[in-house]
Amino acid sequence: MIATIIIVLAQTLVGVTSIPEADTIGDLPGQPQVKFQQYSGYITVDDQQQRALFYYFVEAEEHPTSKPLVLWLNGGPGCSSIGFGAFAEHGPFRPSDNNVLEKNDYSWNKEANVLYLESPAGVGFSYSSNESFYALVTDEITARDNLVFLQRWVTKFPEYSNNNFFITGESYAGHYVPQLAQLIVQTKTKFNLKGIAIGNPLLEFNTDFNCKSEFLWSHGLISDSTYEVLTKVCNYSSIRRLLQYGNLRGVCATVNNQMLTEVSKYIDKYDVTLDVCLPSVNQQAYVLNQPQETRNIDVCVDDKTITYLNRKDVQEALHAKLVGVPKWLSCSNVLHYDPQNIEIPTISILESLVKSSIRVLVYSGDQDSVIPLMGSRSLVNGLAKELELNTTVSYRAWFEERQVAGWTQVYGDILSYATIRGAAHEAPFSQPQRSLVLLKAFLQGKPLPSKFEQI
Image (cartoon, rainbow, N blue to C red; front, side, top):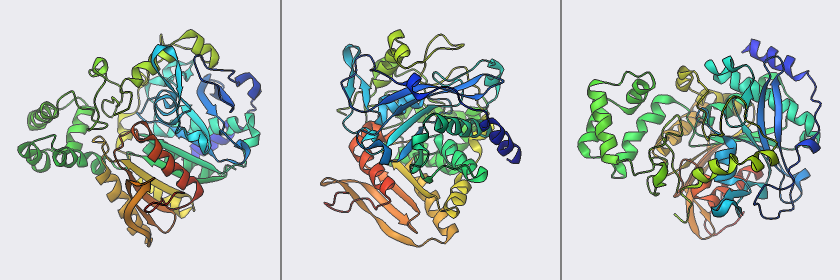
């Protein structure tokens, strides 16, 4: 880690010569008219290897200079924050039919300036001119490059250097987000870092994955007999580990096949209540599992995003280019991420961040079977006990308008957990309004609304 800190400090001493005007987006093809500014482009994070990360930045709809700066990271590892976070979840626009963009009424830039980063290099439009970089990428490399990116991005946008800063993300960003925050603290980088928020995050391999069988059984997706084998003979963390290394066989292979048969391929594992986009049902997208999205929800938004971001006029408007790949993909097919990193627990990093007075929110879309809520909730509860934090908000329902939006518990006013009722692994995708309420409360440091209260 000391070597990483030295490398980061050396990298950030190199100046950035480009100016924000060069990254200004006039209008994206097919977008509705808006009053806020948009920017996108590249930040070089390794000058010798010509490694550059692509970003998309949307200013807050109103008073951007006084609003917080929020960095968003999607997981995978190897999936795009622009393809998922910006265009499927909480960005200002979503791809629609007829090659146009629709305004997202619950975009996070209503409450913050939002910076979407495609990381590491090899994801989306981000690239390394030295393709040997893709052979083995690690959490340590990703955190280092992300910090160099932030250092150089702030040089390009100095007006945001003193804004309250929050790092957010989901899924494998349960590694990316706390590791980046920890590196900021260790290097004493002068960001005004106030907190992190991570949704359905991978925090501890065995705990998170072993909850899958309980979730599937309790939701009626698998039989009693299959559940019994998963709990007494071969648990899902063992199956997941064997799958990772291509060694799945014997009773573990048998019960895994039985589980897949019972669930069926026509269930979205990222939200077991949603329908699937049938043309995509057999496509592999995430590394952790297979995502399809959908309920007055466009279940084919992923397909539409891929089509939209592969248009030449869209790439020109975004100042984006394809380097070493024939097309833009939601999740990288050139990046080889160290498979051992997935088993590195990050719950201890959350502990160190809390001790550094950085607020931590863990939240769960409660219909996700990939990283189910039970694991995340138990990990946060265990962390609170380890830190000897008193409960300041007892476990209770929270509300969006007049409906229960989820449940929450707060410890010591610095560590909190919340569920989002009816939400998927990508919570803002399926419950955008509730997710926006959650974000607003977190940024303001307020408890989530109790009955009939609005923040």
